[in-house]
Figure (tube, rainbow, N blue to C red):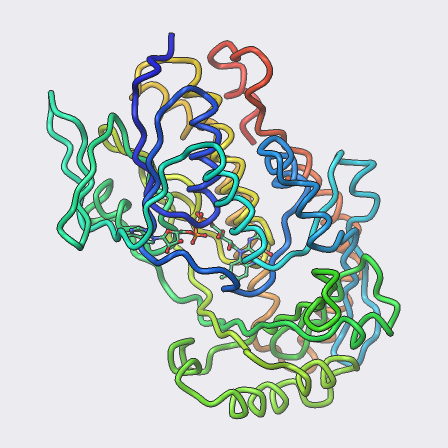
Length: 413
Ligand SMILES: Cc1cc2nc3c(=O)[nH]c(=O)nc-3n(C[C@H](O)[C@H](O)[C@H](O)COP(=O)(O)OP(=O)(O)OC[C@H]3O[C@@H](n4cnc5c(N)ncnc54)[C@H](O)[C@@H]3O)c2cc1C
């Protein structure tokens, strides 16, 4: 039986943290959630939550709000730099997977899940940056923060993202994030700029000789309801270097880089403001995801480069699987092991797909790009079917009876 008094300390109020907080609370635990930054609305670029992630958002109770505040994205059309269509994937997502894929602003999602956690009486603490963890036998586990304060709990969940401090506690000599050599830029522009092309529920994705450009609708807001992103080789400059530059300098860089690419790419770049630059990071596979009473979830456990559009959905799935397993009331060590056993094969398969996808955005010779585009034409229909496993996954729910142990292990991937 679950002890009602057990308390979870969760580090990180990104995507995995608040989702796990809500679901663990519903599974009967006390939860305190700590975030390094102050609460702030409106940060970040656009992202897509795939049907597998939307299924968890539906369980949490915010899927309809996200569909209303975002934009359903039913398919991806791929183009060459000149605008020639080279293939299309997905389509009929609701019919096939029970949920749509939805483009949204990251801030819309974060606000919705943090508000939900708030409404469900999760104790939320902002401006609490984890410094270290103390896990001594016969005493509660203690999270120490950089402001000198601390908190005690029965177990600790590290949902603190790619640069995870909790990961350093679990694996003091473990892998650190590395730069993949690609840099991302993104932002929002008025809907009319791409709506006039008849984009509807498609996301357009263009592969250049070097780099990649994507765009799609992401909210009903006429002024900033279209999202765009550019991925390109970083050429020795990281995101921090771009962030220090004037926006006009970044815009000129992007216009130069994408010169000659098909419309509406140049128009989007002319209209773009508040351009955000992000490094594209990856972390090598971790040998373990837990140590003692501490478990890693989301990017802290299996950071993925963004090229499969699945990192946030995986983080949501982790939150749901963890809550389902914790509700079974097994010993903590067994629960953490079962979690890793169920989640690792799937997460690693998707991380590998993201790495492969990222390689298509690097520099090609003109002939190499031509060959790649022709290979895409043949491979896209096959690859598309091979991606159904990502969207079809059901992380479970807290309304049905707890599963018998082992039942989920068999369908892990
Ligand atoms: C440019 C870009 C585009 C992307 N697009 C998509 C997409 O379209 N679809 C998709 O599914 N995924 C996408 N991803 C990946 C996705 O954003 C991540 O996989 C997802 O955010 C992981 O969620 P998380 O909660 O594990 O980590 P995060 O969202 O990174 O949250 C971690 C939180 O922990 C906090 N934190 C960190 N350290 C501490 C500390 N010491 N103490 C307290 N708090 C701390 C952070 O401030 C942050 O709030 C994209 C990623 C990037 C970079």
